[in-house]
Length: 547
Image 1: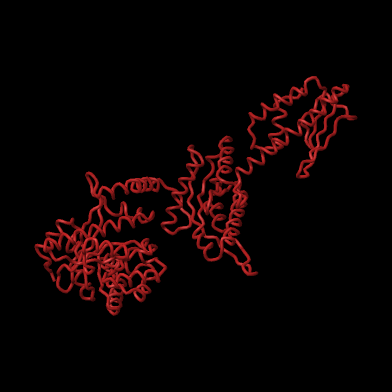
Image 2: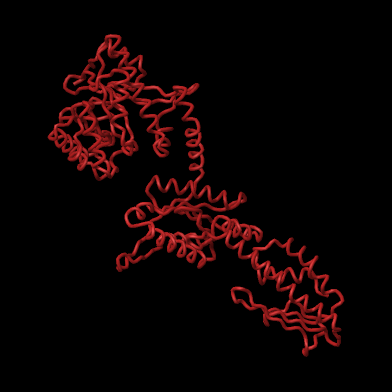
């Protein structure tokens, strides 16, 4: 007798592979197909002349039988052949029942084929043709059910600067490159018994055996795409950033999250590949806490200004100050390195910068109203602000709100060594100058664009990177040559040379000797709160010298 399991397993293996709901299939065949075979002496049931769904061990009659061929709208032919059991005879009623059985098998088979197509579509990323998130999960579930998932590792892959390709060429060219990368990634992973899929945008996931980790890394980083532009074939070595992690009991999506964290670290450190490590998760959780609490902290005025004096090397008197932000929480003052990098990465730093500018202007207004002559205070502004077309107007608006003369504010541009749009920077600096607001650039001497910055930007002050001072202490002669050369060049452009991080009189004497105008560092004072700095302005601005 033909059983439910035989029918269901056949369609499971031949038609749906692992896409169908086995319980649903068993239920359908149990209710609709198996009862139709009751009482029929079936010796053999064959599909498409290739696979026997049922074969009676006692044999079948080769003569006669039912042989039907069905053609669907896509012109796919399905052949269903049914023979009677050896030594049996079919009545006319039996023949009708067998005919109905054949037609029912075709109808239900078509239903399952449609189910397969629908589920395949649900697991496929339409633009690229490779699996999507659902497909990745399905593959992982199969591996997990066979106990093999934890033998694999997971890659989170991001195409580096892919948006620039779309802008530089066209979205059509970008789509071609995206599709080629997807297809090559999928084929590369399949070649080592792995898997790959697209999460969306320019993000992908690849799965590979841990034993094939090195080969997977090599394949992922060596994918090329080629397109024809104006009839000329152009090759694109696709640049990627990727993180990878082992897959544990938590499953594939947890591994995707860990790999994503590792990829973010690869991006920050400008590396192609990085393996996930526990400290990355710990740092990410801290960063998440910063992000979640930042808005309320800003609203509750938990951020305060600390002032570090800038000292004129010719007179040893305070000639200015830098406003440094501190986050005051119950029981502790959070140092900037615990929150500034996070706010920089997510862009919230812009809100904090304007908060600090407003706070500094209020303090300057307070000094003026109290009859205390202020000094020029530099306020840090991130390069993210340069995307704001109304930036200068908004800065001026803050100064005007507090009735602060422009001579008391300096805008210090931070993290500018790798900023590429010089024209935007130049327009910003020139616009500030038109309002009488001075500007400066920090960390000069890092990156490869520093000399171009000097030539193109009419800033008033250039702050040398503190690494030069550290190397001075270590007796690095080449750094002495660089400091002397930079100081000479900056002064030749009519700018002020400021050096931060100065801690010893030996450093101070050398820097003064080579022409550094302004000194900032622990040698004179650590950053201090507003009240202490106010007292410093009142009691005396001259520092003693040990020259």
